[in-house]
Image 1 (cartoon, one colour):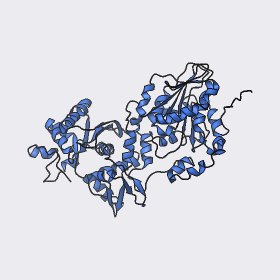
Image 2 (cartoon, rainbow, N blue to C red):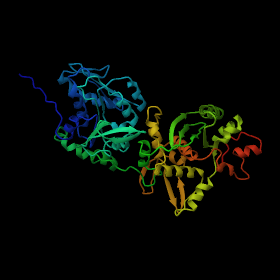
Image 3 (cartoon, rainbow, N blue to C red):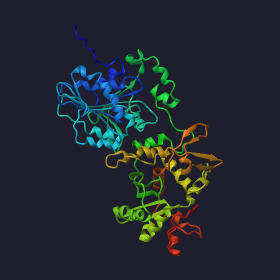
Image 4 (cartoon, rainbow, N blue to C red):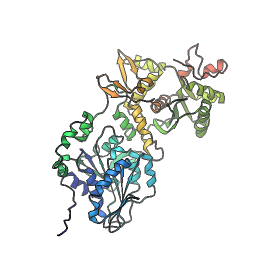
Length: 509
């Protein structure tokens, strides 16, 4: 009996358009069930007659990788390819190789530093941050001029995925479907240029209806997608990006995405740091450093005693920048007071350039007293968070450095989660913003009556970013700290009037 040879080819429509694209970058984005993973596996095959063809296909976790491995076994063996379980690598008859890997964390991408690849594939690219994608672009090199070097990716606009915003910005908002254009990067921003001056890019919308292999044999699949919650249903069933902001969210996701994806312009200014100190428990101490409106360094500690943290500020922050070219501030309520006291003991000059964040800024209140919309804030923490909202909304914060290789911040997704967890209410001009204890709760009810999960932990990273943003455009030893009440027993000026005492742990309002 003659052997039956299975025909392997992309299905008509978006799959076929995708694998026939000659651009350097091409994405297949949209509905679930469109055959995107199979299209990705088929795309690699176009240059397997060249032994120099060397590819890498990435998923987020090993569990995810097992799915793509299983799918590859339905295609590649019939082409004579052999698979190494130990190396997770397919080798084709003429020597081409496809490696299958995963990145538990974005920083794991650096394990591929030094690799030379002619093809890079990202399955569910929206599960990754932008930095690993951009880094792997630098691995795209091959001496064979007959091989089209290319990056291919697939994705669904899951609103809960860390990369949905940058992926849709890079492809769907920059290009119409099927359009080919050329882009380069200037000052961390994506710039469209003419042919020959940038990298070619294209994308196609994945339509489940075109995947006859699925739709002809899985009648219940469409019904199962209808059971998803509304936001996930829009993403998986319709392939649409939806607004996932709650009506009372303090900082909107679109503002965050603009800050991270290089849409907000860098504005030069002095160097500053903002620190949120935690002495014990599950909370973290976090320090944010930046220049102008651009943070470039975020550090975290599980526990540091007061003297050690004060010494770090003295030696690593002030000492590293030299001649006190940096100033900053931190929350001095409670445990932070001990750090400030130790900092004073090291020298008055350190205290002069470090603002203890305790009292409301009268100028901030005055601005709203004189405006058409009169807002009133109950404490300085509300002022700080509202200013963060103002600057995110106005595009005055640039977080693009935190996704670069040089300044990469591995917990950017956690910072985003914390920033987007804050919510507020307005009652006759009084602004109420949630506090830490509110965010520790398991869930909450929005102003629209919807139950949504809360953060479930202290937003230490968000607080540090907010403090940095509060002090970055203030002069060292700001007017707020010089306007202490007559009976105040805290602050730099106060320490010059009375003996220095350790007041760590004392509560201030």
